[in-house]
Image (cartoon, rainbow, N blue to C red; front, side, top):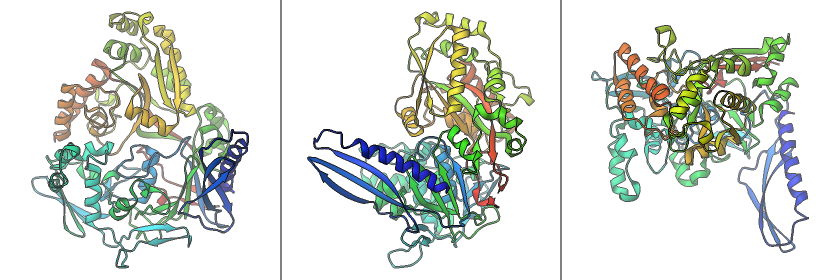
Length: 612
């Protein structure tokens, strides 16, 4: 029934498109139609059949995707990602929580960070040790994990065979390939900067100009990266300087094993259903772009103490905005949803829904960034004026209402070495607006007053909650600075592309923990060369401090360094505007047994169950 709802929506969209065609002028053109067809009991056709239909002086290219309805009685979980397609499920290229959620369930790194405790646990590696100098980590890998993929013809998950007909098992060579692929500058992986910072020889490889070097020269740089296989089950990684939290980094998604044979054969299409080969507790069954994505349990995942075999055979994520998703939750069509801001008060007052509500801290920060190369935010005083004009307390009390904490800096308190009010840290923009100070900053800027500012646009992804926050800040800037700001929304994937290619004057984002250390926030996002730094801001002193802090072993000194760096980021240069530290505000049906991740994504659904 749930799947049917989504398919009906898709069919309606297709029927509208098709009925519009007859009225068009009979000029030659190519129209690509993606049609989803329900065929009772018939598995999905993965190799997409393309049929050309020639009408009167018009050529249509029709792409037909046949999708099976769920088996009767199949235990399923239906969730929601929000409006817009999942950008990618390529481990080397993923940067957002939706993409990473799928990868978290289909791939497993050498290690894995526990979603509730943030402790580093075994992944594919059963154990690891570090050399006396703290530079070489040796990971001992499982030898019983096969590569798998979903076979639409049989409706089963099957093991992948090599050219000789043997089961392909995950080996050290697969990890080496995946890590080097992420680092290869030709891959253009946004997260490559992180392993490039730590792994010996990785920066030289990652920053090489591939267009100016021969294949032999590029291979020589790759061979110089400190990732080696002592044998099929022993992965060695050598880092530049001792870093106690490196085992957590070693398990991140972009350092996972990857299927070289498929990637080189299929290119960008390797992530599509029928081609996607994985080895984690789930694998990809179906992906109706812009509509839904479905994973199916991998029966060949051996199960471990911290990554057990799944008890839910199938998981589907819809791609709906918050309000229609919440409506489906109330009718039992969705099993868990983030709470839409307009509904929170009603949910809290409802005797049943309030019992299904979960509000808890999560290691994420909600912030606005400035493009410091675009007027008027090329002036630090304008950036300070906009930040000081925001009432963060009013925002969380009157708009978000989910127990969020007003944020004065970026790294969330509680992360290792992060600034913390409990330690007496007191800096950054105020939690309540200081209109007088904001106006003083604006007057001291090169623009002098609001009347001299150019038109200003705030851009965000199309989610109702983000829009409400944006509208609240619009009003604050109007009241406290006399500035009119236009608000523009984009679909999620388009928005991410905009940030990569041409960041707007102001934009919103959230950053969630990859590993539990202040370096993952302060350095990994706003370092001058970070692929996550969409502000185009660079500060040599900031870079120097966070470089030294990442390698410092004395925790008190590290804490002091991150305080210094954050002061530069949010107070002196005001390159970004922290708004609040997240809470999760979620509804879950009473028949769902689950864990709640504090990492801001990457839910461990293999630990969940559905009992109806």
